[in-house]
Image: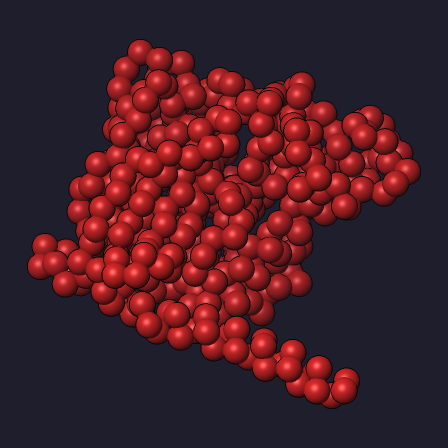
Length: 426
């Protein structure tokens, strides 16, 4: 009887894997459909507009986990087979636009931001639905459209002829996490430096848990995209550079916030290689960076803390982790509703703590947990996080999502990153 039960279980597992794979083969090809959007509005309202649909030659994501089970992000898109209405792909993501909507400026003017969503190129007509998440956690539709993959107006052009370097290749992109680094502010003559900088960055990331223990599941790529100018723009110094993706410090008037609105340019470059997450490496000695979930992460190459900063920003962009600090200068206002449980896995308002890291807390640890030396290495519930000193709680006294001086990621952040690695590498 035991043998029969085991045999049946094995058949179920194999059947599940085959069904997932056959679902990909039934609905998709190994190319990418890229939908370029414009998100526009202000604090009070927003709208999404279709700009263009493109076909890109490489699909670098999983062929198995097609449906988002994590629930991360301020936006969510669903792809359904038009004939059957079967859900065949979904993902959540965040944007620079949604951050801007929480700033003082957004109360008085309208702005438009580039945004791109991608999914494996469909074989048949599909229905795309893009939804926004509201403060209370509910969703409403921003855009719905039907796309015919045979539409003659879908742009099908060659990717730029940039050199693509395999920094670390552990195997198939479909079963590995691909981090693809894009060169920003490197002259054509500086590409050897860029490759070396990416090698150093990749080597550092793989010394940090949980990437270290999962290094065999991760690939690193470098796309050598040259710039006409060197470094990046710094408006506070009246220093403006002509670079590959138009990055700049002083985003939202925060000196250290390094970002770019040129999302289409980033995607054009990254399309030269397979990617699960895009990292923009800026040829600069200045401190700064940025990271937005399922968008991209960006950091500099030559500041003494550059590697620590990039690791933190990848925590945002790849892992969906929230900032655990609350004293640094930010432009955001009322970023979290204290009556709603945040979707970020490392932050809680205690509204629904059961679904967060409650299972990791020792029964003798008080909740909330006081910031005392005896709890320095303890997983607890420490007040202060998400840019707010009160009402938002974090899992550790110190973590890489709080300061660059932390030893590394806390237990909760590590577990969340492992979940993402496994989701994308299955």
